[in-house]
Image: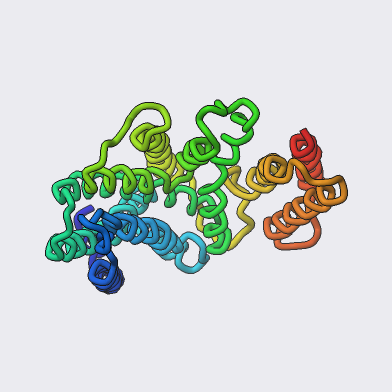
Length: 347
């Protein structure tokens, strides 16, 4: 295990240096030129803690690095090479995961603290002690997000499919919440903004986003409310969702590792985490969401929206099969989803 880890570190040394250099330079430049306070007010009020910058760097790394670390599964030659080594596939997945976490967390750590040093040197009226717990929270959440994205990406057999799966699974849970918690049953006293905040807790990157919002309030010496519809309330929801997703992602990643086969490389991505579920699910959930947005549309406009969603579903089916010839059960599932989604759209 030690030899494999050392080899993985040597193999990733160049991208580690590149990612770190890009993150540090970006962090330094942005933190130096950003207006941290409303200086034209007397006294100046806090404006930007730059936590959103550090969060964005971490989120980008958590998307790019899993794809880079597990793309060997997508090519027949590299899959044959790695799976022929005298190492179990579960251990190989573990080594790749540890190498990926190194590629994510080292650039994030250096970017974060270099940026915080610049912010502190500029003398803004911040409660800078909160940057310390914010770092540890985002560090842990970033490690969890890596596991979620790694599992999602490895459900594909091609690089392009893996990227599409990452995008699709990022957004599917909020759409499902819209279905089970429609606007008509939402507490109207809470307001539309609170419902939007509630839905924003269910993206895969939501825990990082809400942690940045929470700690920015603390850095600005503002009161954080954990009562319903406060920033702390939404952070706790996003945190709970993120912890569950991370636990499920890492568990499934290693449990499924032994089932990986070299002959699946560059083949149709037939996993149940892929097109087979995503295409009909997005037809249903997309039509339901569009029904809320265009609830007052006339019949021709509504029909056009439904037809466009069906066309997107067909495109997804073509991408799945890599052909314009779909199987009969693909068509049955797609049109069944279209019927259900159309009913939800008009209801």
